[in-house]
Amino acid sequence: MKKVRKPLMFSLLMLCFMLVAQTGKAQAPPPPPAEKGTNTNKAPGGGAPVDSGLLISLAMVAGFGAWKLLKRKTLRFPAH
Image (tube, rainbow, N blue to C red; front, side, top):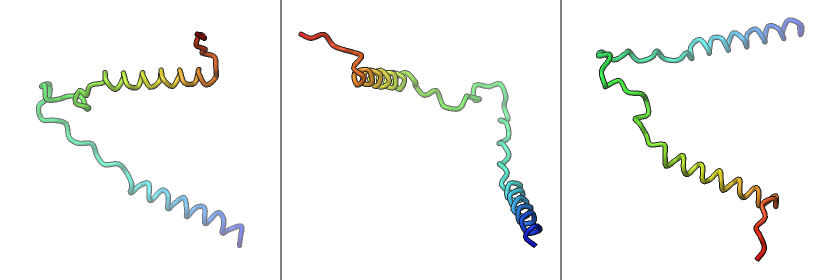
């Protein structure tokens, strides 16, 4: 009985997974716009500015690198 129960349970479990996957499909994409080739078709994002965020992230990376070098004591300042 145990030899039959294990494959049967596995098969039923796989069947359940397949049924759930079949009902959980993604929705259809939206229809294309009616007027093609006009300036109304813009890329997603809306042209958000990147420069200030890029500068902040570069400054944070540079600060982190300097902190790691100071912690490792490879960057030494001259003694006065």
